[in-house]
Image 1 (cartoon, one colour):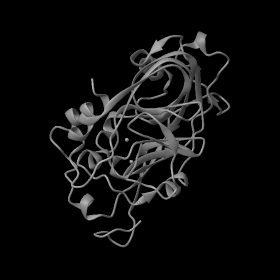
Image 2: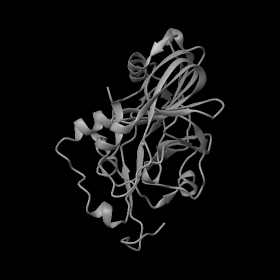
Image 3: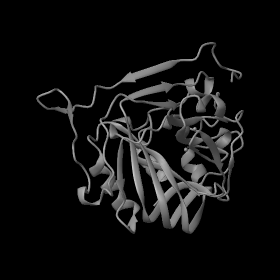
Image 4: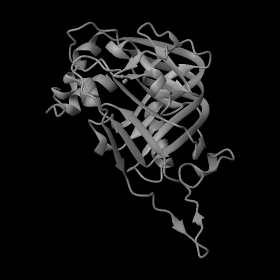
Length: 289
């Protein structure tokens, strides 16, 4: 769920870089890295971990800005793709969900259809990175979202870092929803998502892509796993509510650095970015149970 100069904007683009400490590793007598074993060791399917190094995740605007109805952005899809070949977000006026796979940005609309996004289309909120699969596992068969989330927790070296998450495989079911394109004056997102329609896909090959974000980033991003789905034919998809993965693999790309770009618009300057009911808003708009 995601810019050019418009009226009310300032002149220069702000760029905030947040640097987190290195992931701590265990050294042996020769000073090399000892690999940490995580997750289901007996079910790795020959997959192994690579040493974790510094890696940047880029984010355009804040989740709290989106919750407050800031649905028009400055950043174009073309500019966003310069920040990474993998990601998710949304488009101006909430005209669908966004997913970026292998350097291609797709627009997932309210009816569940997916099309390639125009490079000049703008986004009010998006997260992107150049995906490097440093941690890989075969997923347990016929696993639901809640159980797979716990499995992924066991794969991570630490819960204090960001992770780009890519799940590829055969899904017996995927339940999605997608926001409806809005018209100004924009309503808050908790009201907008009441118009969402769920889409149900069965027996489909595809990719679930997104980010696992630490709880301390709540408000900056969506804490926990925020993921979108697209099928292998790139024809259907949406914001994931639930799924059952029949068989597939999980790949994680750890992120240690966050590059945050804030909008230079009057709407962002006047937005309420610290709502008292933030937890409830995030739950209603992103989880919807």
